Each structure stands twice: as C-alpha cells, then as structure tokens.
Image (tube, rainbow, N blue to C red):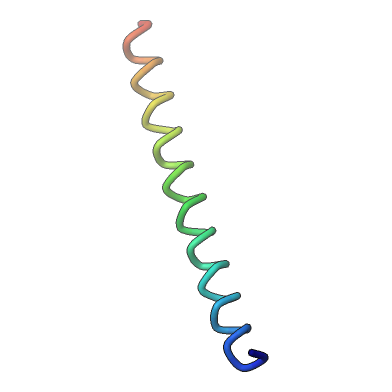
Length: 39
C-alpha cells in the first residue's frame, strides 16, 4: 500500500494538471470564439 501510494498520487496530480490545462485551453478558445462572434 505505502509503495503504490506515491505513484498513484503523482499520477493523480499529473492527470489533474493535464485536466486543468485542457480546461484552460478550452475556456480560452471559447472566450475567443465568443468575442469574435460578438464583434
């Protein structure tokens, strides 16, 4: 248990960071599209 915990924890952190980056990219592109469509 103690040996597998760090690996799964690191993997969870990496997955969370990836999810956040993807969400930020998606949010930025959506904002850009909305701004372009309103202009």
